[in-house]
Length: 325
Image (cartoon, rainbow, N blue to C red):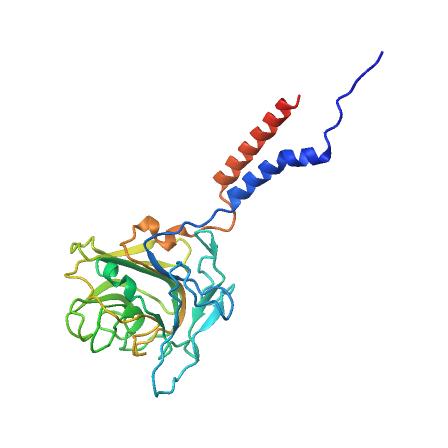
């Protein structure tokens, strides 16, 4: 009696059968980060010595040092700083919206100072949008603070005789407002920094040497307490909650041609001391779900994505086997 047998499928065919499965699993673990139209600039401080100050938003708003004509700069430039296993920045998230975070920007010298070595960029092309609403976010570690002088994290026109607009700052250790209280200052007139200035205090406080997420979101058309929100999260303390302060105000920040300054006032004073990372500026008042801190992820793929991919893969194999019977 003659017998026949089904020829074994060549290994190549078997491999081709599972290629879609491999693609599904890869898609579960690697997805492209979403781009947000409202992002003006996003400075991640990643890359090498030639690229770490580049803007990741797509607007080409790359940072550069402020220069002071005819003056000697007392400190070296801030440096690219690899995030360590312990110490400043150790608790900064390592994955944000599918983007790996491995480095930050740090001041120099004994106190890690940005004194007269702040970085900046011209954002005047986006100024009209910012006077209606904006959001500023960063991950920070403050290593030192003055007794009376505030530390400016970022702003436009700070301490200038004209073009004053806004600042996000931290009070000194001896301030009557409390040590290291987060302030949001808005200048509605656009003239000298000290005129038409509103100082909104959050009563949210930083400790030296701790990692934090900090943000201010503002809708300047809303003068109720819903109009401006300051956020702070202690990243060094497990289980710490995201703190919020809702602030009333009048008016809007003034339109200005002054550059965005990060690390000190535009003139170089009131410097930050320590580490700054993942700076993002948006031209809307971001909802809490849109904040960078809400997009922090663990490096491993989510369980739901992996399970979905596994089920799809199994069904694909079953269907292929049934088809070839």
